[in-house]
Image (cartoon, rainbow, N blue to C red):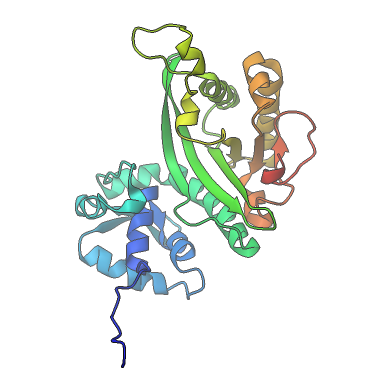
Length: 301
């Protein structure tokens, strides 16, 4: 008696599906970045065969990045509707970019963040660690009370990473991308906002400091099993300028009591983007923001 073979649908996503999901998650990606994210072992021009039908179907559009000879792709309104109920994007607000001009205006910051993500992704692939293209989530927001005029924490990204080995280690990190477009002091103030989030316990309306509130979850515990480490990635200036900005971050950590208390519990580090790309994030390219200044890998902070 023979057993009939039942055909089953494929379980792997197509390249087109993955490309559309990644554009939705990051909002803007160049063709070379999509090649590295979706099909790094294929020839670079293969990504155009993936993107062309998406563009012809009206799901994506692109903007030309002046003088660089390549395009950055973003979702159209039809594209956002297509991905609206995809499980990998659940909980994410997916929005179309209004026009190529609007896409070009946000390209510098968005694509710099993707460069940092790709540095981690390349390193993870080489090491055999578990870190995938969708494990970097940009623009994550958490509500906060009384933060000196800011009522929320907006991280440039949060990522989740599992180091494979004899002992599996799970990591998560908040990432701040600094292109030296804001003052060094304003950058350093982000540490105060993170420290406030670390200690914030939401209270139910009408209840202030009751015994029951003492056992309430801290705000971050509703989202993370352990508070993510904080990683500052700097670029866009001379090495001297970037080193000075890292020194300012260390000074804020030492001089501000709340941040110093926070730094005793949460790893904090800063690195130059070009070093991440050249050497990899597990190399000793990170300066700890508290304690000894000896450079180390990001998991060793």
